[in-house]
Image (tube, rainbow, N blue to C red; front, side, top):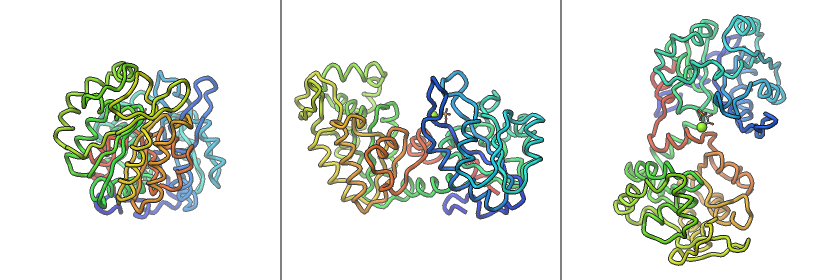
Length: 409
Ligand code: 3PG
Ligand code: MG
């Protein structure tokens, strides 16, 4: 049971000899040319926890996941995911190239205790991606065909928990047991802590190349008094500096304009006024000049691309982080892939690693930067969520969490 949320977990059900449907999120980056999986982190996350446990407890395990979206280059079969899973699990892992037709149903019926069957990409069936209530999804052919075979349904796909899709919520009303898997459980415990009851001071660090959610994150996190301060880097910082009337150089304004971020400025100006001192902006920035890093104060930014927060800013952020008890970070501070501009991100990670704080990071680029700079295992909780994490931080809940709260049994 996850306290506070009243959600049942694998501790609350008997799975031995039972047929267990498990909704994981195997959605992985895929090379558009070769269609090969580029990173197996998400597959590992489920394999090493929930799936291993189910196999060891001798459940008959049916794995359901999506990969990409129809029309996108990363939309692909789950056959390679199944091969990777077979190498990670001490079990027989089969794959079937269908989802809920007779072939799939026969494979499920033929499973022996401790065996695993991976069904085809559930988004190959168009009904999957409709946003609908659990009750409506329960009437779909996916749920109607498979639910009678499942004794237990485990939702483990935290990183897809912002999607009220059929395989995520539709089994809830009809199966006997509907519970959270270990990945979901671990995420919910960590997130509940940082969103509902953070130890203070609580600092949020936002950066990266996506700034569309910046205003919403700031207004929710400060409006609900979750964080004491928000430290900013990446495009979010450039946007806030520009909104605050700083000259950040034409090239940098153009990037914000092209991405449509300038429209957010009136809202950000309001927030800067509403929360003085709590939205922390860089005092200096690093620009690229003739291939070199040059640190400049924010009052004197030349018309050159901004690629990192400046050294003084990074030192100040480190100081604030070291004195805090909770740190949540989403988005690197600069272009960390280029060593010259990885300094800001590195100092933030170093401070997180050495502080006494409970630290949480999430989002594809943040995880990539932590792994490249060698900090992944020095962070208290590395979230598998990108979009799901952001939505949780903004709203304090997600559609799938609400369904688990209502239906876990
Ligand atoms: C993700 O990676 O964001 C999740 O797997 C959900 O996928 P989606 O954004 O395509 O719905
Ligand atoms: Mg997504």
